[in-house]
Image: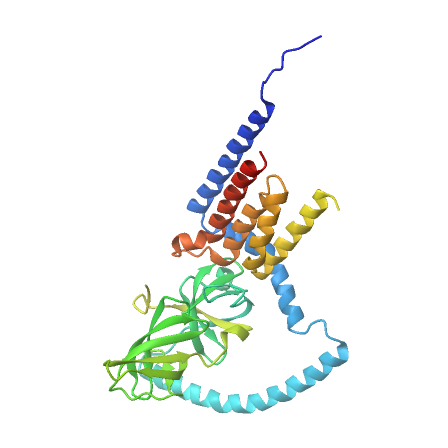
Length: 270
Length: 87
């Protein structure tokens, strides 16, 4: 007995179903991304961050033998005792500094959160860090981020619940107002990527390699150290190259400012 | 090794590459997967995951969607090529 086939081209129907369902999924994803921009980053980061934390712990030596850990612990205790003595001296100076600022009505009320660096350049691109502290710890977008030693390195560009993305000021196109050298010459630091900056200065300003570059705020945070100067006698300006005193490729911990956001005029994007 | 096992292995390596941010591994593996397996939508999921982890920052504009755009482009181009060459 011969039957008529219900559909002359079953493959075509399947293909059409696939295309329609694919389009529906794409539209659905686009709508979610449009109206809840933090949805995908939050979901995917919460899936990956436990593995990143585990990797961080392994890199920090949590799987070493007990004898090695004990020896390292002893060594670190000795180092800590040495540092404590130095810290006491610095602490006294800082106390004096904050007392003087309080006396002048400019006391700092900001607090910082210590965060582990889960991802850093070159793994993450655009000179971006992923840190393991987020809005749950009081971090918000535009919070300033410091490397150990109070070196200003970037700002929080996106704060999720338990992680945040930090854009370094050295990211290409990022600009930040700084003061260069002992003359405190104002300039705009332009990110070149890889933790490097450049700035244009008048040739009349005396700048030498090794000079400090600082943040123009009252706190005068260290920003970088001049590593090179390019001068053309035909030009009225010289290009000053500088880098932070810490290596952004080796950062393991950072401090995120929970109280102080970045001033709106301080950063610009090309 | 059958095709399903090979596909699972490639998916797993792509997952590891996303974990480490190795886009230079994800793209060639995606091309291999798209060429040898039907409906290799894992590459689009990889693009979404990569952007969600490293790119999706407010204010980045279309640069934030580079993973999704590249994966969809690969899917369309390889899909078209397969159709033309395997006729």
